[in-house]
Length: 165
Image (cartoon, rainbow, N blue to C red; front, side, top):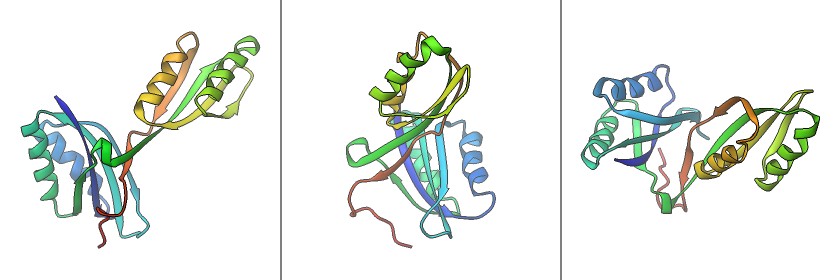
């Protein structure tokens, strides 16, 4: 099993995300993460999908997604030619004695504390998936009350593969 990161440029129309995820669902393909957002040109949306499978399945996914009417461009974002990031927000239960320990871990990872209450902190962390996983591992002695991760967003390095529509 391999992972592939696909970046789609699609028409910014209602139902486009549903049609893409429906294709995965109908074929029994797995979506590990999916992010979507409007581009600099509001007519288009950029969707980043992380999927997994063997080489034949991954090739088939790419071909079938490319056939969808709304899809204008599809690229594979290879790790050595791309920049990937993910956002995580983590609510950690802390009392007054534990708070400094969490703050120390936050500082090491260059994360931000975005909310403080009497008995919890909310931490915002941006980075690659390994960085976020390592941060969560270091919170092992603390109670994580809630966790939200955006999924992977990415862009290819340089200007060679920029799509102009």
